[in-house]
Image (cartoon, rainbow, N blue to C red; front, side, top):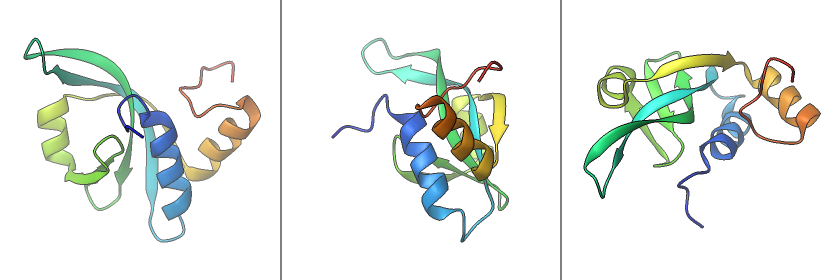
Length: 104
């Protein structure tokens, strides 16, 4: 199964599976993504994990990248951050993995 377009579910699953070992924060925001056909970037909504050690877990590529490199490459805009417990409760309450609105 492709990982493309599944960042919200993949990020939340990774967060919940790994929270006991690390201090991770789930971020919902937007990034500049490269369109392979047009070779240009466009801004898309996205979810990722930031670590207290200065790394980002990128759920679509299933890899870690230094926060400074992620910022340089993706130009992220952070809209909302969630602890594991906050994300877990919102996902259960709303029956979806995000993004969540203020009304949620």
